[in-house]
Amino acid sequence: MANLADEEIMHLVQEGDPRAFELFYDRHSGPAFSLAYRMVGNRTVAEDVSQEAFLSIWRSKLRYQPDRGSVRTWVLGIVHHRAIDALRRNTVHDKRRASAEGIEERFEARERTDVEAARRDEALTVRAALEDLPAEQCRVIELAYFGGFSHSQIADQLEMPIGTVKGRMRLGLDKLRTSLMSEPEPA
Amino acid sequence: MSVERHDMHEQDIGAYLLGALSDEEHTRFVRHLRECHVCRDEADRLQPAVDALPRSVTPLVAPSAIKAAVMGEVEADVREREPRSLGRRLLDRLPRLPSVPARAASVTAAVLLVVGVAGGFGLSHVTSGDQERTFTASFDTDRVANGSGNLVIGGDENAGGTLRVHGMPSLSDNETYQVWLQRDGEVIPKAMFTVTGNGDGLTAVDDLDGAERVMVTREPAGGARSPSGPPVVSVEL
Image (cartoon, rainbow over all chains, first blue to last red; front, side, top):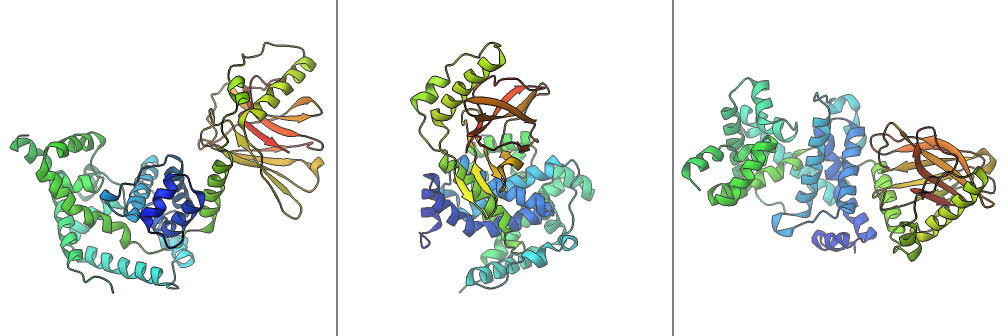
């Protein structure tokens, strides 16, 4: 089973196979927790978000549809929604910085395996592409995607018109896409 | 679909993909996408940029506690996948019992709870450590769809144990969960407890020596002298 592709594993998970689900969990828990923690900034909340996301996949048998993207993308989309729910349940976006908790030092994936090395390289690539964006475009994208803020909240925070915020979101995504598409494929 | 409507919505594509529209705006935009291939194509074109964002975060290893919690729930669900028996279906049709004297109620309750347990809760799973034993709780899945939990008993049964439950339905202000012990044909009322907003509950259960079963029912605030219905949680010892 360990050699099955993600899509094949998902088929078994959706049939209620607990061993397939465990393998599915092992493959995607790191990126899931990483995203949850990046968004909520608190280890306990990030653990809850991750746990809820995986259990919702197991229990509600959320249907993965291959034509909509990879399993990884699908899982991270579920985590993203759960993290936004968690952020919005707190009336104030109260996030501690990761360095204050020291969590990154304790849980950072060391480059023990090819998979972890590839994750790190990919993270560097995407972060570099984000940082190459004009600052205001990068900012609105980060506030929206990682902060869970609506366009009107972002407009208030940055003291700019809503239309400007929306425009910068779109332009930023366009530039990001172009930048990533021009990156050479990993070896 | 008019050009004007397209112009109204086109600017929302980025915010839509980033999840930054209000609920109402999101609904309107999704409706618009169904009829506007230009916006659909543009959303598809920009989607890979959004998909890349979570991959920009520092790669972390998920704490092992998450896997323990998740797989504990998964394995509990698998164990509870027993087909509903005839006993369970009959139990669902039993009327609520009227007030009766304590001893009669105790015997009747024992019958009720035995039927409830035989009907379709499934077997408890026992794991043993050096000094303590863990019994997995079974749930009435009709009333507790996502329940899980266990009873941990230390080396000395007289010292009692700790019952932990998750995924329990919330209670109103006029209700409580009540623990019962079944022993030698009697059903004995024990502790009462409530659950958090997440459905988590924890209670000590004492005097377990010789107990055959631990059960939880939903009762009026203040508890009851006899169970008012079939258990929502059952732990076979």
